[in-house]
Length: 261
Image (tube, rainbow, N blue to C red; front, side):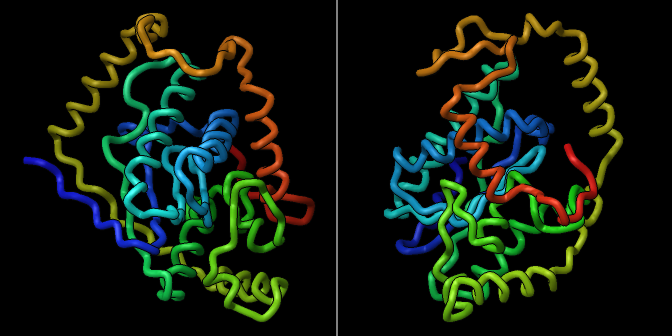
């Protein structure tokens, strides 16, 4: 049975959620998230769109984007998924699927300002809700772009944010107060049956028996760049994208720190 087609209304923003394969913590390392920031920057030259919110977690990411043509969203996400997976597989020395089979996309009407603001706050609150931070600042979330009014190189302010007050400083203060009212509702624990537990043990046992060398595919498709995974480095241009983003949004002196990956 074929999967249902996506609803892609023109002029809408889309809340995107993309998870690592099997919900593994494949992007917990900062260097891998730096790669994702660089790929997000490159994606703007592939399919025209506006990036309003981004938050990179250890095993998933959230985006709030608005393609110039909503019908191009699948093309945009296909390119992002392919390019980032190839780069991250090369960097980590692995092969196979990096992301889950399909991303989640929720359309948000441009005049539904309350829902837009709730979505922005939900995305920016992810590190806090996960217990990684005490506050909202995180080097891999663009909350600082809204609260500090700092340019991070890839983000734009959503029109709903700009309507909060007559001035940018006023918009920032009102959004900060709005975020402070956020209450996280914990999700219920997933049900786990005996068959699922047994299957998990068998899969983990099979993975541990494979050597790292045997997991690398010698026939993996070549990328339009090259870097040595032994040096744990990425191209300098990519590094600069990430540095600018992290400087604009990262934790500074006086910000509360709870835990760092």
